[in-house]
Amino acid sequence: MGITTILIIVIVLIILSSIKVLKEYERAVVFRLGRFIKVKGPGIFILWPGIDKMTKVSLRVITMDVPPQDVITKDNISIKVNAVGYFRVFDPAKAILEVEDFLYATSQLAQTTLRSVLGEYELDEILGQREKINVRLQKIIDQQTDPWGIKVSTVEIKHVDIPQEMQRAIARQAEAERERRAKVIHAEGELQAADKLNRAAKIIGETGVGIQLRFLQTLTEVATEKNSTTLFPVPIDLFTPFIEKLKKEK
View (cartoon, rainbow, N blue to C red):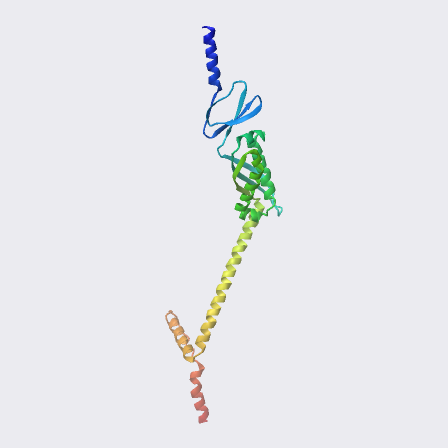
């Protein structure tokens, strides 16, 4: 094998090694002799062997799991909270040049922000206002990661681990609240019933005939029952004419 053939083979190998191909969602941050040159990709491009170096960065959305954090709420209750975040790199150059490890840095920032923000809320607010808290977490983390070329799109609280003692207290509170509502509903029903009965009494009391009709209706309802004894009260007014007649005769 001649020297020319060897040279050709070496040149071909150098050319092949200098050809790089990136996928649609990848970008290459290129350094030439240690200095940042440009961001290349996607597709095919050439790097000078021994001179150019590249760092690949994915532009896809990254799912970040925030591990459980010990949080002391505003009302001094110790809880454990974990969350999930979604972010992506929108500026590959900043993601490599401005921070050493943007994945690790974003994760640590999310953990500290989660602890500090939830510490400003009471337990009832954390349980009942998750959407509001999620929006606030997203804005704070996104604002701090923006200089790194990272866009945080969503932060969601996944689970709030409450101590057993507090769970029992919440259960008792919920039970007491249900009993209170039941008593209020019952009292409102009694009030409405009393109002209706009062109106009915006034209508019936306007005429003696109405009272008699109501009396006879009550007797009809009693007669439908299989009672061995039926008490039939007679109004004293029926005997008034006879009593007066006896008085006159005397």
